Amino acid sequence: MEIFTDCNTASLAPYVPTAENPWDERKISHLYRRIGFSASAETINAAINQNPLNLVDALIDEAINKPLLPQPTWAFWDENNYPADEDMAREVTGGQVDEWELTVTRGLINNGLRERLSFFWSNHFVTEYREYQCPGYLYQYYDTLERHAIGNFREFTREIGLTPAMLMYLDGGRNRRGAPNENYARELYELFTMGEGNGYTEQDILETARALTGYTDRPVDCGTISFDPETYDNGTKTIFGRTGNWGYDDVIDILFEEHSRIIGTFICRRFYSFFVSPEINEQIVDQLVDTFVNNDFEIAPVLRQLFRSEHFFDDTTIGVVIKSHFDFFVNFINESGLGYGDETLQLMTNACRLAGQQLFSPVDVAGWQRNRSWINSNSLILRWSMLETFITRAWEADQEQFRTIALAAVGGDSNDLPFVVGKIIDRFVPKGLFSPSETDVACQVFKSELTDDHMVGGAWNLYNEHVPLQVFQLLLHLTRQPELQLK
Image (tube, rainbow, N blue to C red; front, side, top):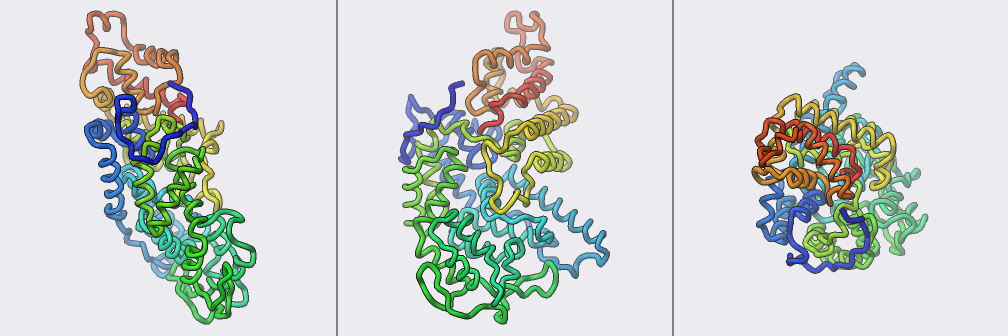
């Protein structure tokens, strides 16, 4: 395996396969690991015969048109729907959050780019469930992420600020005339649209907070939060040099009119670091900003340009991003095809929480910090342990599914043991193992159940009785390899 570098000089021109730069399993796996949470061997194999640009277009169109996750029965419950007893109410709400966590996790496994983007936006427009404790608010917030995930960023920004989860989390629900609360105004500029200290002043924040007053009417806990004109500051405000009796919609309009380029750069840099590389190519970002602004902040044209480009498919972008904890587990589920149930998914989400990535509750309003921060001595052990538990549970449930992994990776039968090992490794690792000696160790692990007699005259093949156990042991070996941490 070659040493990773960050010297991508390729352009945003559409990627056209050549003999020197072929459309192969490595590039297809790269696409699915970045555009979603990886894919099955069957999906990867089927994509070999597709035009890469057409495939990208199809995946983006699918994300635009995909149905939303099903609305739970409790989506708009308020305190009147819950038991009066606090302990019983806490038990009911806890069950609802667990239910939604499972629904979202299944979506991450199955729903490709749309859910990948919803996951991305949950770490951008951050709220923390523990701060508002209303399952209905959680659903309404996530539903907003899904509906706007690949839509218009300006309208996304406009709507997310009025979700009950955001109003409660950043104190918008307590922002009133005479006592403006600056929390949401500050994060709107600093974390959501422009970046810290970029394009705004402290006076802009104060004036913006005044313009955002009034969304304070909440008759019951967990109920609808609506606009109350009695708590709105209807005085004149000056925001980014423009003076008037501005309200909520005015703030969003003025922000995007006055600072379109700053907003475009901030968001496109986040797209680049998330989908391409933590080492940002500012020239490429600048071109993406042109597309973003020229298309009135529509997200799809930017992603279409990026994912279709020779820059995205350049070999230097493959395997340079450290997987989040959810990536680590969900990718493996898709890549292995091993069976799982709700109990397994609950164990997985609990392990992610213990490792530092709790669904619906990033560490703070700045979100999870990503890449190298995912790996430390504690989180690495948790990642190893949970994946080993998943593999062992699958082995105990159905050993033959491990043979299926080998057959799918190879695309049929084979008696070439090193070839089989290499193909299985390639299913899970973006650029193979770091050195030939490490690959030799993996081959020895795979051969450990065999005697010399098994290998005489090509007697061994993928239908040998030992193959399920061989694959099982190889997967356990791979869980501890550093290359598995990358995508």
